Image (cartoon, rainbow, N blue to C red; front, side, top):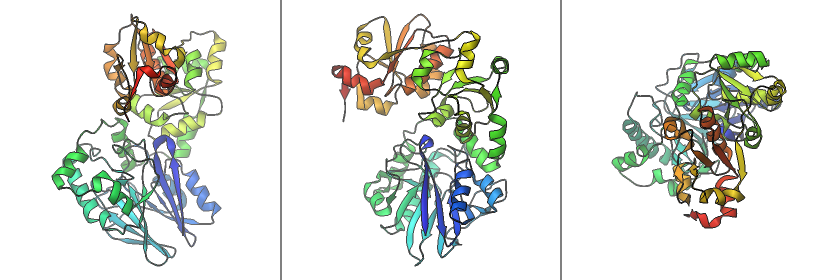
Length: 460
């Protein structure tokens, strides 16, 4: 028996490859089929099954492509209604894989079709459970992503039953392999560990502690952050099916001349500049939004950019396919192409450019004391509670576009976040909306603490 976790850090997402006696199963694959097909080929294995724990909201799964290319059977749990060839299994149904077996456990709550898959080893012993978004390390799946089919309270009630009557009945030694890790928006506060055990979760997971149904619903369904709008689009894509990844990559990864690029821009396409924040600050195409590939690229695109809007890319040379791939993973398929030659090609034309003043954190105190500057912290509320700076306005990046009317063109703004990545995104959004007097703090709070510790209140 062989198990490999394939973790995609940008989306905090885990998929799995399981193999026994030359037969393989994949659980919750990412959009691009290549890594899974290559792994099976390298191990001389045949993919028999693709198990989907639910219709994912935060990414587009590769199940349809892999099924078409390998002949594997796509398996969902009860209540799923996929619009393509797939098998809808039953609670406790067993699937043979080599000399091991996998049992479907229907665990509704995150969604109505949510299921876990229990792997039994060669001796027939329960070995590991792949929990999707039902159970995470230290958390459980949020119950508000069904787009109106059921209320979050109704789903939370189902989740209570699934955890109490199915998950907690498993032996303490059973390994827990979740669908996501820390940073995912599919739960409230996921742990940093990539796997755990049932026993550890019974002991440490807040949602598995003894409590009434009513208490559970209040805790799990309350105080949920608004999910990115693209979540509901992705769930629909995963249910309806999609274009093949190879076709999408061929169509979207196109080099555009300056003239073609400008023509698409004039027709309403949004420019996403994927370079590092420091490079972007030195010069960029007016109107471009900086979301760097080196950070949480896909989640921030999904949070800030309308999934139905056409997109133009400005990238570092050689990263064009990576940018298109990472957009495709979250269902962003309206990419018109990338600027051939990157930003340097634009520079050579003499066309207008824009810049952002990017200061070192060692200069933060000067701006803090200067009444001409309004200081803006774009971190998340939970981060701000841990490290607070007085006399600073808090405007979380995810809410920025809904509060643009709170900014005025005649004021000077100093922006910062944890490290500078998100504040540069915010700076580019403000610049694109005519707020031009912007200064960004390179290094963010992490470096402000070093140079001006007296300004930062740390709450452990």
